[in-house]
Image 1 (cartoon, each protein chain N blue to C red):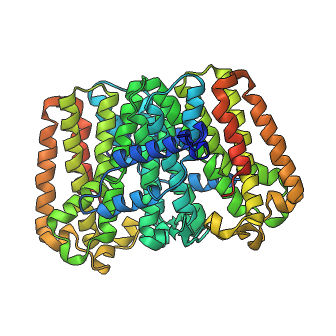
Image 2 (cartoon, chains in turn purple, cyan; image 1 turned 180 degrees about the horizontal axis):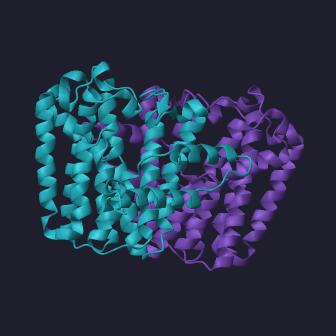
Image 3 (cartoon, each protein chain N blue to C red; image 1 turned 180 degrees about the vertical axis):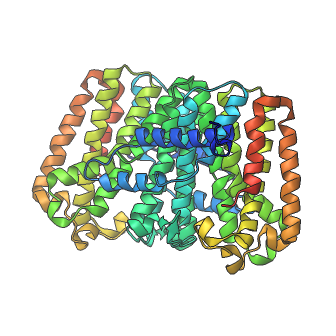
Amino acid sequence: MTADLSVVPSEFQSRLTLARRETDAVLDRLLPAPSGHQSVIMEAVRYAILGGGKRFRPFLLAECARVFGHDHRSVWAAGAALECIHAYSLVHDDLPCMDDDDLRRGRPTLHKKFDEAIAVLAGDALQTHAFEILAGLEIPAETKCELISGLASASGVSGMIGGQVIDIQADEKSRNEQLITELQRLKTGALIRYAAQAGSILGGAPEKDRLNLCQYAEDLGLIFQITDDILDVEGDAATLGKAVKKDENLGKATFVSILGLVGAKEKAKQLADRAKGRLAPYGEKAQILVETVDYILVRDR
Amino acid sequence: MTADLSVVPSEFQSRLTLARRETDAVLDRLLPAPSGHQSVIMEAVRYAILGGGKRFRPFLLAECARVFGHDHRSVWAAGAALECIHAYSLVHDDLPCMDDDDLRRGRPTLHKKFDEAIAVLAGDALQTHAFEILAGLEIPAETKCELISGLASASGVSGMIGGQVIDIQADEKSRNEQLITELQRLKTGALIRYAAQAGSILGGAPEKDRLNLCQYAEDLGLIFQITDDILDVEGDAATLGKAVKKDENLGKATFVSILGLVGAKEKAKQLADRAKGRLAPYGEKAQILVETVDYILVRDR
């Protein structure tokens, strides 16, 4: 009997699956179960964050820590905290006063499933949980404070929130390549960069390696967004699970509308080469991070 | 020449003024100045938190620390963080999907001055700033983590957010004395309690004193709410700077509608006696906290 090698998952796939499973388990354990007169808010928080998701950021965090030999279970709790920030931003971005979205991952958005007030409060609560989880990690207090400062910085007005503000405020004329690069660097890039920062902090990496991995993650975040824009034009709605050509229909400039399809693909390829180059000093230990670049580059959803 | 003693501020008044001045100064220093393409969010954050306010919570925090001889400037930064959480909760509570208020302290609410999206994001940013400020305090990291865990717990689904959820969800029939006590204990009480908790943590108070001061602050929070309900019926709109009889007009049960005016005043008096009793072990060192009880009890706004 010979094994069917085509169905044996690669190490990369195994690690991605592990990250999803571990993150979901930690979130389920750390988020309060519905109880008391306010049980609806615990239900809403759980609906918002336990409804699927690839857990790419926790995966990236854990893999960056592994480059430095760190494989302690604290990476999954730190990843869960990061995922709480990501989830809160999605809940608030979906609100009627922002993107006014009815669907998220094929399910009703939180304000559709519950109501707007609960969606605002559940987003608020998810942010609170993120910092509560980090402050409760079983690691030295100095490291916890570093992780907390970093997460606040990445998600605040000079990070994720700042990017969202630029996105809702910038008029069409000002959306050149420089502006949308800056916008995406903050809006989606800051949390992806933080995954690398937190992972290398937990891994005890020297300062220059932390910076290097953060730069790798910045490239990764930009590739992620460019690929998103390409999928928005080329993708299949059924595979994506959301409406395609959304930004184009909204008249919003994207990397594709500015650089053209060929130009956007070329830029993504250049960034991918640069990102992989940054991993050269770590050799085999960064193999999963190298494959992550291709995973982001060639994904179909 | 004899001094006019009637205009010499009492020590209590001086401490209250000091807390307001120090908290405002710390907030002005720690919150980022408007810059970049997202400068509007920094403006909105500053509008929301630097527009007045008595800074009662920072005052209480600093005074609880002083009971244990702690008078380091870190109390003002910790108080500023607490004030960020308080301010974010007001911004989100004022939103159209919640209380739909147009005025706050005599000025347009944030979503009226800017727009709803900016109000949601500025509230989010204020919460982020709270944890960023605590993580950046110049005190031992263990203490910072204690302060961060405590603030997350006080402001989350088992604290302030939980109270707000009960308030928007509870139907009129279920609003008996027990429920509104629980609701207020969380919605407004949790942050007032945290002021005492953070102050006594910074003061290095033994566990039993921390608990004792937290219980004092719980009574204080309840007195605060009962007095609010009494002012809502008896108060003068011009002095209060907001519409009176608001809860009554909304048909919401209050301590006054349940206990009657006489009963509510009696309850506040009983709580005041109990709160002062808890301060007996600290003698003169708790004199300002004793006066704080009367300040809350007899305030006219």
